[in-house]
Image (cartoon, rainbow, N blue to C red; front, side, top):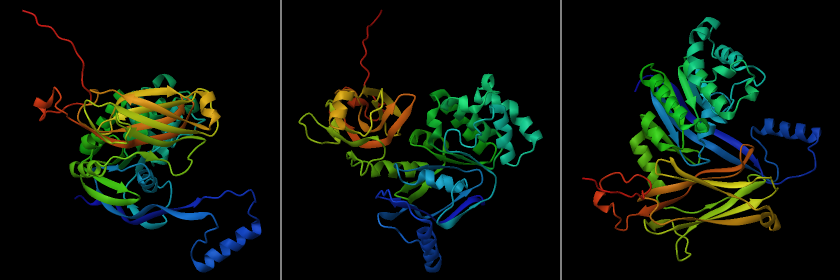
Length: 411
């Protein structure tokens, strides 16, 4: 491997979780007293109702110059926390991460933008933060604007930009202002398919042709496989694999083969998904189906506070976590508020999904206004070929869905 530009040693990040709410304010005297005790004892003293949660623990790996490295894992595995530490947004609790080179990060929509400044001004601001001169920024300016496609709105304050426009400009800046290390989180999913493809091409160019290092977090395993030579697998805050991308994706998929339902351990928002389970034709919970069996999904939604235009949206995704179909159900207010929640049954028809492994992305949203709960890659299940019409082509790639077509013959 090339000389490491990123070296992570014994890295850990701890948070304190509060499980009990109290209306009694903490007095200044209590705060000073507790802080004094912590300094004397050399450790934090947990108040009642609090517990330690290690988002990351004992993380070790190295990344060489010019390498493209993916970071994958289930929700809550610690992927975003790791990137925030590597981007110097937050400090680790223990261990260290040594970074050799300028880092450009794209972690959240609008990250690094001053909302009152225009797109043009933010290009120069971001360049200055990266330590570039105005002459260097001007040299790259036209490329950035052309790639982003927001030229028409360049002199408009970015607070008026849509999330897609924010991502377009932010990625263009991050990729073109010549950082030695480019760090990209799942935020690219906000963009349209054409722009995502364009970004993947640019990241490949940055790594393979320009010799810069790329760290890429995504639930889209197909994009990870396309871009990254090596991949880190995280599980519950620990590294459980770091190898070639092919080996790590296989290990990740194998760990999901025993499908199970989803259950939220505690409220995450006012309106959230409490439970999700799959059932077969006999009404039994199941996560393995023949291709000619229908799949019934039961969503249990908790309604803490009604929001007008509340929807349950869900997408089926393939083994590479690529969405292949999307649908939604509007949640009826009267029924949902009567019991502070509702169960919604959805049916996937037989002869719809081809043999393979699938999962779901699910959200409770008011479209274009607020997302109350977002789940990625939950309820993994498998579809088995029960002597379908494509059995004879079993060595070929099935694709994701059966096509229902008509045909005719002509002389």
